[in-house]
Length: 279
Image (cartoon, rainbow, N blue to C red; front, side):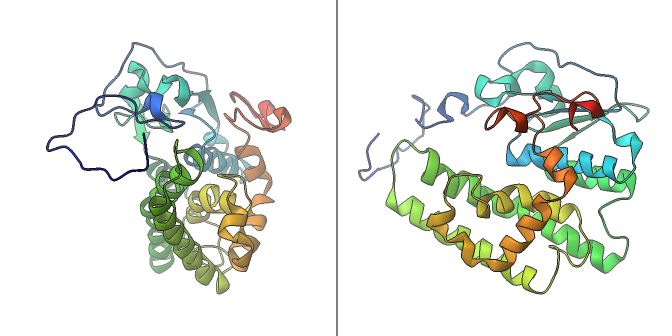
């Protein structure tokens, strides 16, 4: 692969891996690659995930619910190693046909309910437990607008900026410049919003914060892509204030440790099956 001018073929054909950190798990077709049943623990919720930003959203949500006294939110967290292709196992694909973590089964319902896509999980849990989602229609709508802002914006941060800045096999100026500009624009959007609000959607901590923090909070705190200096994240004062405030929450500290496989061992919990797993 070279950084030379590229002319697309008339019809695209998958010929080889594209290179880069995640090349071995990228493919142009869906469906399982192997048979593998998912484990099922004793708690109402079975979470199949990994401690990536999208995975962290859901473990933080569960830990926040438990901290708020919702005992029915007890969950088992099972490791899905995306680098080893666990997400293409037949059992996982049955829960999430898109083969992306996280995936969730709720066994507290009459018929077990599957939930896939992290934003859908946050909304599902917020409505189920009447927590972290405002009841006032105007405030609720504001919260959901920011929740879906994250769904639409984060791919430009992760699949765009993060990939080309940190993971691509070669540095392509055009790609890095394009997605850096968009990432900084998004940080400015958040900074302006947080200049007038304590949390993302207002004075109340909501699923909007839980969705956005693992991506943008981690970014400004230099926990993903090692790009804080490059992006001058210190200049986004309001985002930095908010990121540190959310980071200090005990439930957040617990949630980021679940299904984490990197960093200090005392900050990892490979699988969680009881409250004693995280103290």
